[in-house]
Image 1 (tube, rainbow, N blue to C red):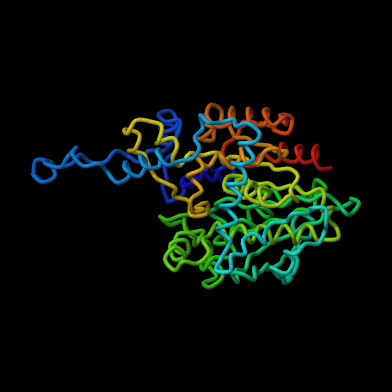
Image 2 (tube, rainbow, N blue to C red):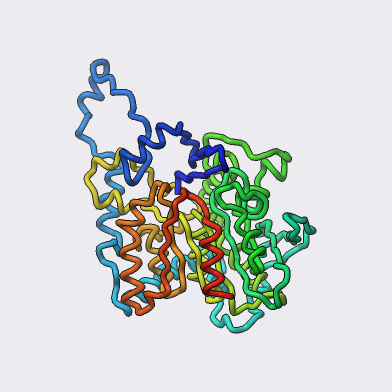
Amino acid sequence: MKLIILLESAMGKISLRFGLLFAATAFVFLITKSSHVFADPPGEKYDFQNDPIGRAFFGKVKPLAQNVIERYRKSRLYSTDMFPLGEGDYYSFRERLIDLMVVSMNGSKQKGRDWIISDASKKRSALIGKFSTMSIGKVEIASHQIYLHKLTVKETGDEIPIGICYPKSVTFPAPAIIVFSGHTAEGGLRELFVDPGSYQKAMALRLCKSGFVALAVEKIDSGYATIHFQIQGQRWQREDEPGGGADDELEVGLTLLGVGDYLIPARQQMANLAALEFLANDPKVDHKRIGAAGVSLGGWLALHTALLSPRIKAVSNFGGMWSYLEYYADRANSSLADFEGINDLSQLFPGMWKYGDQNRFVLAAAPIVMQIGYGESDYPYVNFKEYFYPVIRKQYNILGVGDNLHEVVHDGGHVFPPNLVIKFFKETLQ
């Protein structure tokens, strides 16, 4: 989502995607005024007196954004009021979403379907030939060895940093968790292994300490995979652009649209599926007990990967519910003043939003065992409680798997709640 809050330890600094930085008083004010969005400060009134052309056109031309939303309202195939679906209609809807994700990975040879594993009972799969890994070495963090690898996706040539940690005093093969990074102003592997004060709470390291093999995957355009870090050897900078200068998402995403190459979501998905296979084929991993976790965008990447791979048996997804389009499509045009569009290039699967808003991924993940939640002080919490969760609960119940859905509301903000995540995976995988 465009506005991602990163809570940074005791300082409580707030970094918002696209560089919208507000003081704490403004943050509280906006939270109380709007349950859905952070509005830009009111603009200066137009100088109609000195512009007769503007005065003539005012109120007589439909804004393009309004027209786009109206066309979306008419063309969308699913809306929230259509859910929950009956079992047959549900699985048809689920397959439609999966097909769109597959198409995004097709390439010129139409080979997207080759990324799908049909039999998760086998430890080794055909995906092994789609990527390679190279050891970068190992580092010690909090008395645990983190083994670092460069994963290369052969189809795209993309190189992705990953790290894996093996727990102490357990019997191998052990259960494993693959952890995906959200948007970050610092870098995914740093926040998932090194920095317990970040909003991602060093979750991969914490899971490893709790008895799980933990593998973390960098967001492909962020952190250790950025120009700032790799080419210039610089710390990530805060800039008025996506990711606050911590990622190359805007530059890369728009370039890929222009040249017609695989888009960021497809490339990230290939990397995630490859990392999952790397994990499943590790001799120290019980390939029948693998979970996926993430906060914010990381939670959505966990869901995307679970939709495409039956290897994942349980998902922990925090702080990811958001409405890009449906909120505006179902309300008066006055709400369009806050419209920001589908502005996250990391989630822009072409055509996906005709099947509904972002919350559809959670619906499509059923009947997988899933922990889903929010912090009470996270700004989309009201929408999660009133708009998203009730529909998801009904869908799980209709499919006869209500016990597989675990709702969690914690007293924090836009963060991973470590104890709750660890407890969930211990109950479902250990």
